[in-house]
Length: 389
Image (cartoon, rainbow, N blue to C red):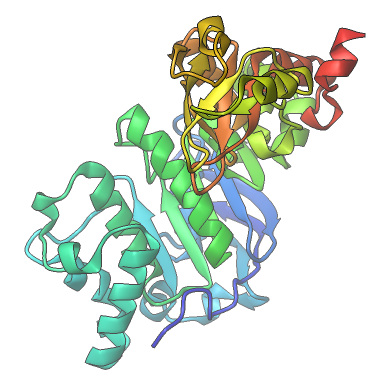
């Protein structure tokens, strides 16, 4: 059975790559050089017509370069047969491109069949990948694409790209056709997935916010296929290399920095966590020893139920007297920018943060995020006690 991540990720290097079409006034790609370390996501971003999709398609020779060279793990792709090369590079696109007459399982099995895998190995791989992308194999394997939601079809497209465990994946606007809510969810799921599989990925998007969120490195292209800047998202936001890059990144660079940090990167505030029936004396002691004066009611498993009103502490034991629901509930892996958006949408200053089991681990506040913006790095955010000084 093929195991996800068994084939090591590959380095990718573009050396002075150019692409000129006959009769065109200027090159589609001009002298493009960059190097993607193994296991990293490189995002190609830029305005329409800048050559980002052309650059990606040069990597698997869907388009042939007219100059320069492209090396995969130090070996030129020009020394490879194009058809064989493409079978060893995963490819996921915006339109997904699933075969409508084939089941989900058959779609995922496309490349392994071409590579001559036996039926047992293919079946095991299909099941493994469906579980990895969060779809129940027994329920989804024999469905057809028309029976899936857009988000489910996109996940299957990613699974198909991963089927032969390629050392490199190419992704062309993979989430561009998905509605904003499901797009954010798929982005987060893909980043979680990348944490497990560690592939080298070239990811094309026109959305600078998506580029900053998804990329370990970002290549900003401008018209004519010129590389304006190749940098980490943090360097791109902190030090744009030119007026073009500064304008493309946008005036809200400080807010975009929040997309580089996750909730887990901040020292969360401690809330007084109480349960129904707990002695009020204990609850009041917890309030005195916490960063917030508002008791947070949780269930037996530590999951948040709501913020309590004063009347809940009027008797001998804590009563179920919620002031408001404990929303939004935030996740440790949430991007800070998304977390701030959730807090503002719910018109609240505080949001409980939960772990993978749903238990409360702390509270994120708008005040903490504002200090993260001012400081430039959440790592330097002061504690509530320091803020009070």
